[in-house]
Length: 206
Image (cartoon, rainbow, N blue to C red; front, top):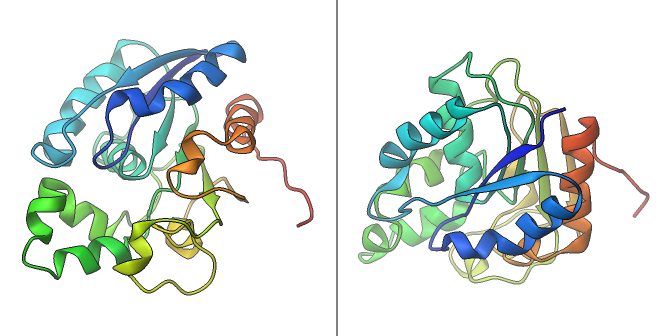
């Protein structure tokens, strides 16, 4: 069984932001491997070659928050055939982010999001073939993103639940957490562990 899990943070966040979920993974018997990248001044074009080199070292699952999920799926799309286990995206705007589009409509927006702007605005077309991808989305609308983008339906305050759906997902589930709260939610962590172990989330009536 694959035990190594490469863990990616999101926009404006340090690697340390993923320590809590990394501890939960370790407690479940996994071996977390935290991956840091420059989200604004480096962006996907700098991160993707480094990420693929890390994934080629040894087979691994991947857990990624927000922008990190987009970076992972874009990397796998460009490098089909790389042996990875399962991928879990936490609150990633895989269909593109209305909040990011709203931010970049301001003069200061390009400086705030930098080299990650295009990927955040447009998202990913679909999951890479042959990769099991699950999404844990938040439905507690607490976050600054709601001031920059219009959300139809549920959201985590930064990303709409609808923005986390793309073609080819293996499974999708929502939890009662905000965008940042997904990193510290026990329910979200339990869903991540469950998907890595079984390829499915636990779905309960709401």
